[in-house]
Length: 431
Image 1: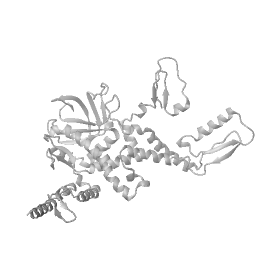
Image 2: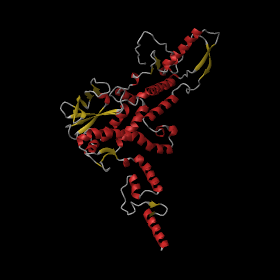
Image 3: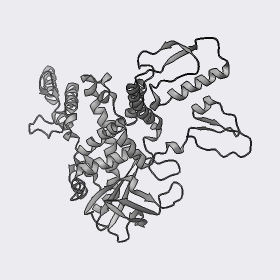
Image 4: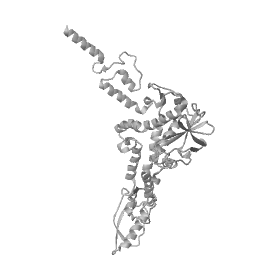
């Protein structure tokens, strides 16, 4: 499946089989096109199809989305104090039919799969929404628009929302409002495709890998069903065969054994042949190693540490170390991008006056051991007060007078007391 190139003249290039297999098309003007750009442009519907059909894609997305959905949503004011706002209350109870976990899971899944997520905010467009619902990106259609710009009209064709939204500029801000002014469509779009307004799916660079995984599963199933390992070396049993005849036999072998669905099928040849060697196991022909490599690429693309998903590296020590990195590199960025966009686009309706949506990092059980470890390291440095260390673990300040004093672990006295005693001793020596 290659991108067709329109020649400027009748002169054509001779392209070798090797070049074709490598996905490279050389042209008279010196341009080289690697594979097909169009075949790597994943539409939202296809991205969700991969998610539903390929287990490793589902696993990677689900691991991130479930943890994003589990984060406790709060608001932080300009002073850094954590509390509630109209917007955080809305997200914690988005509608009568949608829970906070369902909404955040849908948004995180959509963003990770398609680099875009969509929300409909219901109610007067100048007030805090009465409720919000998530719309799947494959239910979004835009009217014709200039390259790279958002469309003037967007239609939703979802069971939850089916109407038209017109691009409208209000107080210098571009918004998508329905005809009655009672619904607003809010796009959350990260990276986009070249010369397009739709999200650049993270699966676009993984087209080949996903194909390998899917075909590999078919291949292994076929191998088990047919029971024959086709990795063989043949030689004529009687006399020689000419080159054309040899090419025909080679082509027959290739045609009957190539492809995941033909694994293990037997073939009757027109000449008597002697088998020089044959693979006695499935190791050299199955896709186990290839699938393992491709799965690794998928998890790495979604920033999931391998000790969390790969049994070969899943020791208790590696797993414990990998958990904080998983949250910091995969879960938190997904949540923060959604929260940032919602703060920007819904905050103007909620009059939150500088508050930002965030999460309670101390309400994550998986990170409790990590936070305790940080507290222990801070204590060992002998440079932080008790209250500073307690705050790093999510604990409130202690009522003790020693809370704001740096403690010397070897003697359990405050640093200023030690300095005072030293100064008093120096005074006595001078006297």
